[in-house]
Length: 218
Image 1 (spheres, rainbow, N blue to C red):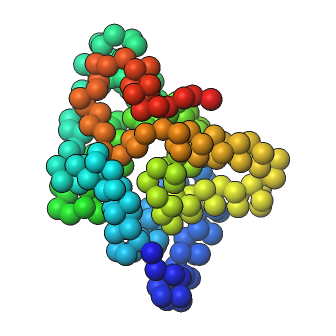
Image 2 (image 1 turned 90 degrees about the vertical axis):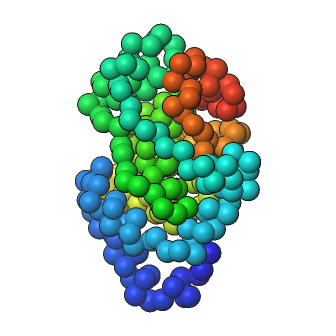
């Protein structure tokens, strides 16, 4: 992964500006998050992530097959037994007025990486037991950093929240660090989630899914 010096002063300034804007923005500001993603994205770093994920058989197969989540019928999944992954996912989405995130066609490994993470984000919430509040998102972000490689984007999201605590509310720092530590340790213990074909597991009991992935909730 290239150093900041190799990427240039303009790149550094753009990243710092996007992080500062995100610190100042309300939590959940997707426009600012998108700006950060565009600012830190660079091909050499992305290739490092692809290489890291391809080092496991599951990750290698995922990049070869590029499986997509496909159309998700939440009402149909909601009719599954209440102990299943599909039911838990549908319940989570419906109760929080969320819709499955979808992306366009993918033509290379970088696009597949982004599409796969986008489509499966809420499934990772369910499987890891991370809430969708700020502490839950912090926990899942740390999980991503540990499992997907320490990309600048995920580290920047974590750093943003720590900076918010420094500037706006230092009293939350302990909670933030506990959430980050919990997500990091859970991810290190768990098997790789990237490349899992979740749409083949909808009818499987959620606890069995977690056990198969060695995920132990705190």
